[in-house]
Image (tube, rainbow, N blue to C red; front, side, top):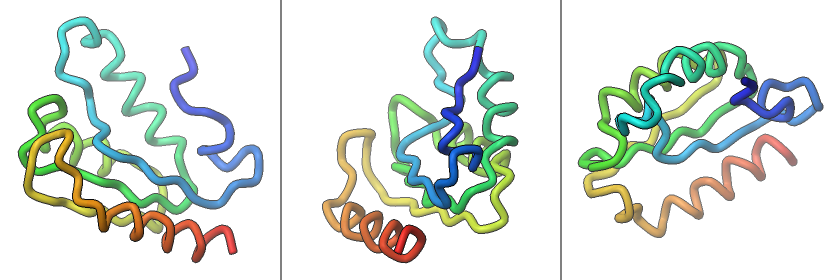
Length: 105
């Protein structure tokens, strides 16, 4: 199973990716893909902006941070905000747009 699109691994020529509220999804139905997510993250070498909601009820922060740590990118930034999964501050969209403008020119 390929969980990472070739664009994100840099195989297609993109140089950046933004990831929001990702992690080893704690839902029982997805227990089988935890190792695949870590392996996929280890193949991501493009610049990454990674968003974490600190009080996320769907993806616990410890799992998000583990996935962030597994990313192979040497240029990765994590943005953490208080709040639940659906409470991402609006200013994060502006941050993501600046991130892409910087990396995709």
